[in-house]
Length: 514
Image 1: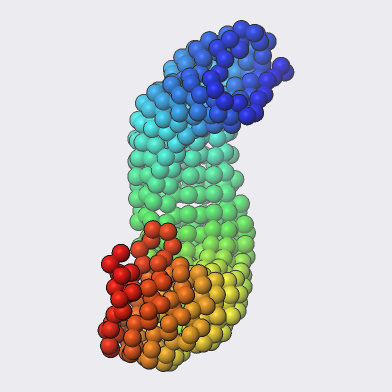
Image 2: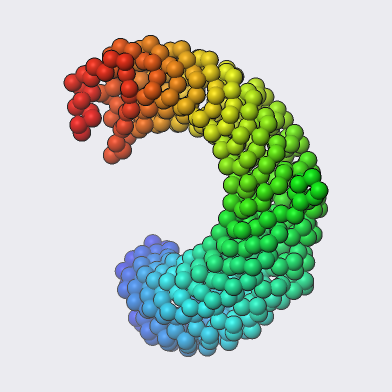
C-alpha cells in the first residue's frame, strides 16, 4: 500500500496533493494542527483507501466530493471544527468499513444513504448536533459491529432492525431523546454491550434480553423503564456490568418480602458492577446476597425504599470497592462483617434508620476513601481506631446521636479533606493538633456540645473553605489567626461561629468584608 503519514504539521492542507500523488492509497494526517477546509479536489485521489484527518483544526463542511473516493475503506474526520450536514454522497462509499465523525459541529439528520454501505463495520457519529430518527436503513448493514451515536438530539424509537443485526456487538446511543419500548432481541444476536442510558425509553425490560448469551454490559439507567427486573437476567453468564439506576423498576419478592433476583444471579460469575439505585424496589435485602459474584466491585442500591436489616452475608462481597445503600429505610445495626471487605473504598449507609454504635470492625477498612454514615440513629462514642484509616479523605457522621469526646486520633488524619460531625452530642474541647490537617477543606462541628477555647491552630488550615462551629459551647475570643484563612484560589471562605463572647477582632472583620 502506498501511504503517506505526517506528524507536527500546521497550516492548510495543500490543494494539489492528489495531483502529485495519484497512486496514494493511505493518507494519515491525524493529530496535527491543520487549518482551513478539506480541499474539494481530494476526490482526485481515486486510489485512496484510508483517509485520516482526525483531531486537527479543520473547518467548513465535509465536501460532497468525498463521495467520489469509492475505494475508501476507512474515513476518519472526527475531532475537527467541521459543521453542516453529513453529505448524502457518503452513501456512495460502498467499500467503507470504518466511518469516524465524532466531536464536531455536524447538524441535520443521519442520511439514510448510509444504509447503502453494506461493508460498514464501525460507525461513530457522536457527540455532534445531529437530530431526527435513527434511519431504519442502517439495519440493512449486516456487517455492522459497532454503532455509536451518543450525546446528540436523536429521537423516535430504536429500530428493531439495528438491534437484531447479525454482526452487531456494541451499540452506544446514550444521552439522546429516544423513546418507546426496547425492542425484542434475537437469541442468536452477537450483542456484547448495550448502552442506551439517558434517554426516554419506557415499558418493561424485555425477557428476550436474557437470551442474548454474549451480553457483557447492560446500561439502561436514567430512562423510564418499569415493571419487574427480569429474574432471567441470571442466564447471562458473561454479564460484567448491569446498570439500571434511575428508572421505575421493581423486584419480585418471596413470601418473606426478600428479593428473589439475587438468587438468579448465581450463574453470573464475572459480574463486577450492579447498580439498581433510584428505583422503587422496596422489599428486604436477602441473605442470598452472598450469591453475588466474588468479582463484584460495585454494589449500589441507593434510594430504593429498602426495608429491614442489612444481612450479615453482605460481608461475602470480598472484592467490593463501592458499597452504596444510602437513603433507604434500613434498620438495625451496621453488620460487623462489613469490616472484612478490605478492598472497600466507599461505604455509603447514610439516610437510613440504623442504630447502635459504629463497629470497631470498620477500622479494618484500610483502603477506605469515604465513609458516609450521616442521618441515622447511631449512638455511642466514635471508635478511636478510625484515626488509623490513613486513606480516608471524607468522613460524614452528621445527624446521629454520637457522644463523648472526639477521639484525639482523628486529628492525625493529615490527608483528610472533609470532616462533618455536626448535629451530634460530642463534648469536650478541640486540641491544638487540629491545625495539622493541612489539606482540610471542609470542617463542620456545629450543633454539638463542644466547649472551651477555639484552637488558634485552625488558622493554619490554609485550604479551608468551610468552617462551621455554630451552636456549641465555645468560649473566649475568636482567634486572630482566623484572618489567615484565605482559602485556595478565588474560593470564598465562610465561617459560621456562634460564641459565648462574640468579640470579633479587626483582622477577622477585614477577612469577612472581602
